[in-house]
Length: 342
Image (cartoon, rainbow, N blue to C red; front, side):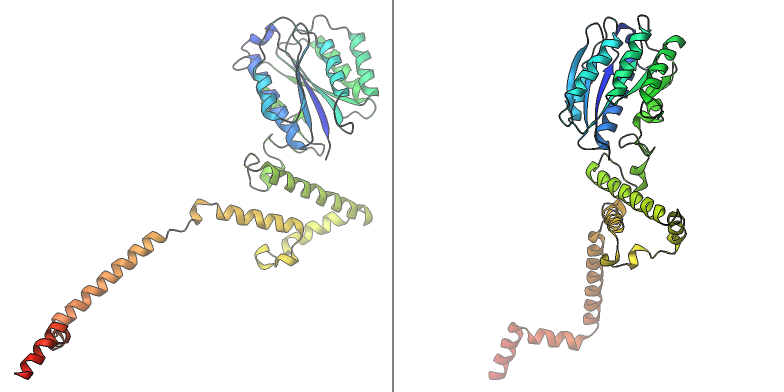
C-alpha cells in the first residue's frame, strides 16, 4: 500500500461567491476537499493531509495531519476574499511537503482552481514543474468554473511536465459549470487507488464487494482490502511462474469450490475465514434474526390454562372421585375419625 503525504491548495478568492456550483463555488469546493481528505486518509492509516489557502498571501491552515476532524474544521473555516496567487501556493505546498515527518511518503499536491487565470507566467509554471518532477512530487489540478481555454492549456502543459515520459502520476480534471464537483472527482483518478479502484470513502469499489459500509468499521474494511491485495499479488506471482495460466484456471475452479458452510475452520484460508466471520456477524446483526421468546411463553400459558379447565370438567363429572378427594382433606379425615369413635 502506497504511503503518501498530500497538500491541498484551496482557491478562496472573491470568485468563490458565485452560485454556478450549488450552493456556492466555495461550499462545493469544501465538500470536494472533504472527499479528497477522506480518500487519502483511508487509503493508508499512515497517510497525512495538509491544507493551505491561496487568497492574497498564501496561508497554511493545517500542516500535515492524520486527524480528519481537524482538517474538516479548518476547511469549513475558510472565507472568500481577495485574489488567488497560484504560483506561490504551489511553491509553499512543495515546501510543506519537504518537511513531512515520514521521509518514505510520496509527495502530492492537489490544486483547486476556480478563478480566472490572469497573471500566470507560463515560463515560471514550467520551471516549477521541472523542479517538482526532479524531486518526485505529483500534482492533481482540478479546474472548475469559468476558466478559459488558455488556462487549461497552461496547466495541461504543467501536468505533462510532471508526468514526463511515464505519462502517469499527475492529472488534470476540468469540471464544467453546473456539474457536481464531488461527482466529477469520484470518477477521476484523484479519488482512485493505483489499481484503478475507488478509494475508501469514495463509494463502491472494494468496500461494497463485501456488502458492508466502510463508515461503520473502517479498520475491518482496511484489513479486508489488505487481504485482497495480498491475494492479488500471490495470484500475479503464480501467473508469472506458470506463464499466465494460473488466473484462468483459478477462475474455472471457483464454481466447483466447496461452500464455506461445509468446511471446517482448519481447512479455510485466511481470506475464507475473514469472509465467514463477516457473514456470521451480518447474520447476527440482522433484524429478522432476533429471537422472540415472549409469544412462546404466552402460548404455553394459554395451553396450561386450557389443560386445567379440562381437568376441572372431568372432576365435576365424577362424583365418586370428588368425594374421595374431599375425604382425603385434613378436615374431612378428622371428621371421619370422630364419627368412628362415637
